[in-house]
Image (cartoon, rainbow, N blue to C red; front, side, top):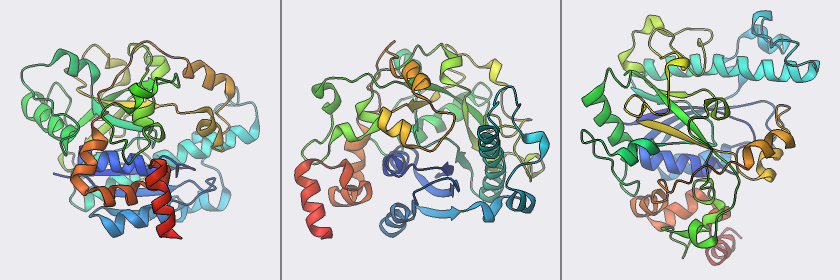
Length: 352
């Protein structure tokens, strides 16, 4: 089995290589449709071209012209029913920007899911580039006997766990639309020794990786802080008539008839949501670099200080990825920003 992903991005080049490499390794990600937000100042094409050339990942790049309705392309705004409330966004410019973004998300996901289903594919992931799919921390702590949780050094570790849970507890995990609770990781720094633990530091700079640098997370029970869950969908197991052609019901519940209501989800029900999503806030520099009117220093500070626990459950992924694809390939795919000083200078010399 392989995984596919629907990925809508805006100025995410600095974390995109890590996101692809991680899910390539833990989920057997092999098909990706990338839609680039027109407000993005960066193009991911050069990064994606390396993955096409050096791996067996099939990547399509979409612009608005490939999937947005013609009325939107002409008017530059969604239909009235998709505009955000004025009381929530009193600034007209901000209201339009957020309305366009959220409408674009729903249209893109509808088209992307139908595209993968029409291709005969099965599992599809829809998260953001700062979100990484993991085995639930509580599941790892409780270690239920009906599943074996592979270490992330092992290829396809999360995919293996997913397959086990579907085989043993398909109704409990709500197959074929499995909700993943999100856990927010703030920007409280750890010691160098903690950040570099289990990392091949002979070649890589651990502090350049979101998944390795940020270890401290918010209280998992705080659903309002973490936000609504994301889902994993087996599109092959859902009849085509339930896939909307225009917009999904919600990006958090794309197929209304099959996906759980968000209020039904609880962190403590780890058997119902064995797969989770680590959501990395990142540094202020990265957070503020994106052209997004919803972001502010106040919002960042509220989330940045969270420190209600730490989790090192993802640390082995890089070691496993390097072993799986080879050091040279791993360095090239990730790129110089992820390398230590010596390997970075060697790569830059080669490029020169």
